[in-house]
Length: 192
Image 1: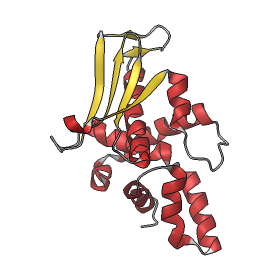
Image 2: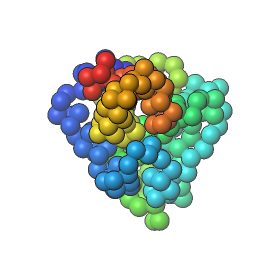
Image 3: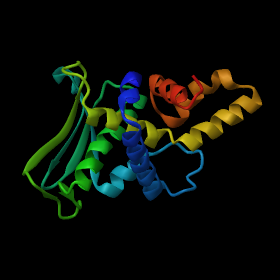
Image 4: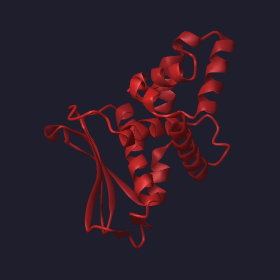
């Protein structure tokens, strides 16, 4: 995944960061402190239902589906809490992307171009190379869950206090994202 993010053009990265930042500020405000990003806040305000199910029998990790009465994200129940959190953030990229394109409008009077629409499914087996949209979804999730300023502040405090070696484990617990995502974010921010 790290290699994929390198190929995302600078212009595209800026747009994705801007979108993640805009959503972060909309739902959490500018002074959300050091708290982890609680995706339940976004899900609740957008009227999105979250389900855990045994999706692994179909080689599915996560999916987001919309019909006339509901919007739902399903996550494979066998995943860790950190993996689930990251995948929900990725699925939110697809939701907000389609909402911005006018494919979805409002949750009270849900309007769609189709009667039933699965707007994205993440498979556990590699079916094809990642699309640009999938790379954007990864980058969005990373920037939403691990805002640069928050990560840098925690890293600076841990370096100052001399506990940097335990910081990665702390970041995994604090931000509720997989260790490989933490390492990727640290590398991207120049701590690699």
